[in-house]
Amino acid sequence: MRTILARAIALAAVAATTIGGFTGTAAAAGGVGVTSTTIVDGAGVLTDDFGDHADEMGEICRGCSNSGNTDLVILWQSILAAEGLLSAGSVDGEFGDRTHTATVQWQRDFGLAGDGRVGDNTWGAADDRLYGADGALVYYRPKSGGDGKVWLDRDSSSTLYAFASVRDKSGGCLQANPTTEIHLFKRTISLRSC
Image: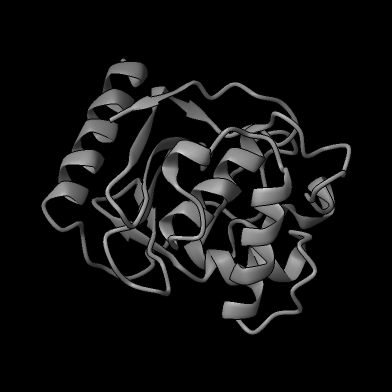
């Protein structure tokens, strides 16, 4: 049942993005603190959910041992794509040269030191752009505006995040097949064109 519901949410997210997206503010959910050390999760307000994992995951970066072929890198690359710094087609889970260059630009755009390493400050700035829509549906809204978005499903009971889709600023789109929880240190997300 959860898989069917998750697929329906992912399709609704893609459709909503196509017709202009949702608007809203960060919404609170039940629970307190971090509940998983292997899957992206969050509790309480949305705008601290990514930062909750800083101690567990360390930094992701070009050359870092935890930054090759992981769901967490897919999440980060999706944020970069939503901002127009990567294409959706470049989201591959590998933190290579293009991701490094885009990360430096993203950090500078957000007033951070452009070191290309995604750590506490970078995740903290990214989760400030999370917004809630229709309960468990959450999206990353780019600072730069436009149609780019990352759609996520935050389960209201377990507070675990699942990846639904990413749309870049030029309309390129990838979605998870099926919507899949975002693991910190391994690759479970399979992507396909929307």
